Length: 243
Image: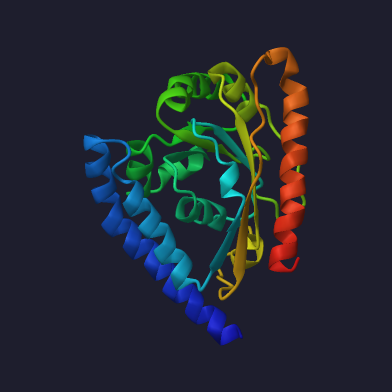
């Protein structure tokens, strides 16, 4: 098992590095023409890495996806969460990402080109400005994914939610859609580079939470209701992967 994990790790990280170096310049060029054009390539990139790690993804609840754009809220256990979502959701989806990721050469250029939203997670003026700029984007042309816990959970326990996703949904007047990912924590644990492949991951999509008629005064209630929805989905996702 140890040897198999080592081989999976080598193959997967070779795919990550090689695939990123090849795909990133193409993503930048495609995004310059149209922001949606890189989407098929991003799905292929994600699926290639999942395949290299031997990850099988089971998806449930896509019938709940709204026709209009939305704000997704999801638990966060591993860097593989992003790969699972990009590979599985047939949507024009972009992510809110921590500022540190924008320091990675080549990868950061592609992130900027596809309008990844950079935050420093301080809740300060720069974060408020970034989310304000995202309002017309989520209203008109793309879904935005938040990991409202703010960081990866090392033990799979769902933490409290920060307010950014709910505030953006309220200001943009778009629904909040809860998601849950399970199984990824064991594939690539937080703080580790070792891939434990050949496993199943599950993605659950919940029913949209409407913000119609709600104001910023309802923020705390919406934060708690979205967290409860993610927690319920996570329980079901954990059952699928055997946790």
